[in-house]
Structures are given as structure tokens and as C-alpha cells.
Image (cartoon, rainbow, N blue to C red):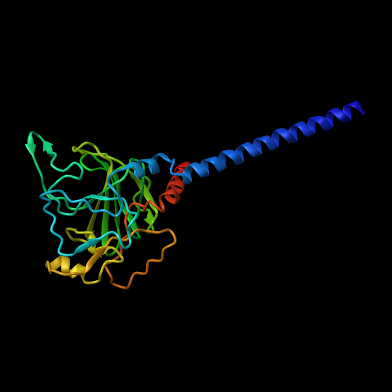
Length: 278
């Protein structure tokens, strides 16, 4: 009888300890979720503390960029992280306007054949379209870089901190391919950012703004021939629950390569899961 009581007490004690562990785990998970939702993730905090704003395309005084169309970030990209240097810009990213690009003792302020999107180091970078990875490597000049090609486009991502895809990988729009960094010969303060560059297949660099999915359809011709137009380039965020229908032969296939603030927690969690599996 005495031994039976001891066995019962031991069983009850084991059960109690197990329940304590379960409740503790649930509490910690719940706290983590609440903290994440409250913006306490380091990247969320850094984004929310930034003075660069959302849905903004910064311009520098004397910026040589001359769009022949309006670039709108407020209709479909209101919570997008800011573009800090535009296509064709002769200046360096705001708020670093006016700093010199010094190399080998020579000041060079050349053309900028892409756009720079500010984001904290470690922010997820997502594929702007469906395609196949043709380059995933480190370059001393442009840092960690990825090129994704399709029949219509080659899309290039520079300055990455991490590359999470390999040559030959097939990716879909919205897949995480890497993280924002400041790698390569970044000589204007080493501010983390994504350099995003597009080429029409087998062609030279192209301004990415006419190719957002929601841009007006005549902008490709407007950009090619320099026609003045009131039509808009509508920067288009990728939404996890969005539907993106591409008409056959339509070159408007791109979505923004950085998640918007609204969807950032979703992608940060996906990034954590992806890195755990690697």
C-alpha cells in the first residue's frame, strides 16, 4: 500500500512538472507572438524608427533622373519601404545626397542604372517575378548578387547580405531569395540597401518603373521613345494573398522586391523558418 502511494505521488509529480513545462512553453510562444505583433522584432523596430518614410521616392537636388511619366507609390505601394535613389540618378541615395563617390583619388558621379531601396540589414528580399536563378555569387564590386531570368526579363539584386538560392533554382514571385545588406564596394556610408536592376532579355538596362504589374500599359513605349504622358508607373507591392494575372505578351510582370510594412511580419517568420531548414 505504501509503495502504491509513492508511485501515485511520483506520477502526479511528473504530470505536474510536465504541465508546468507546457504552460511555460505556451506562455513564451504567446509572448513572442505578442512581441512580434507589437513591432519588437529588431527589423520591424528599425523600419518603424526610420525617417525615410513609406511609399516614397526620394529625390536629390540636381537629380538627373527625368521620368517621362509619373511614378506613383501611393496607390498600390503605400506601405512600401522608400526608394532612396532612382533610375538614372547622378546623385547618391538620400539622405546621403552630395557625398562624393571617391575611388582611386578620382570623383565619379555616374549614371545609376537601377533603383536603390532602403531597408535594414537582414530584411527579406523577395523575387519580383517567376524565373530561374542564373547567377548567385559574390562580387567584390557589387557584393552578393543574384540574377533571375525569364523569357522577358533579367532581374538583378545587388548588395545582399545573404543569398538563399542557388544557380538553377526555379523561383516564384514572392519567394525569399536573400536578405538586404551592404556588401561590395559601397563607398557612401555602407548604408544597407537593395540595388534592384532590370534588363529586358538580351538588352541593356531598363527603367523598372514601367514594368510593375499595375503600371499603365503604354508606359513601355513611353519609356522607349521618351513620349510625354500623363499615364502612371504604379509601383506594385507583392501581397501574400494577392492575385497577379499577367496577360500573354505583357511586359508588366514585376512586383516590389521588398515586402511592405503590413506584410513584413509574415516574411520575417518565413525567413526564420527557411534559415532553420538550411
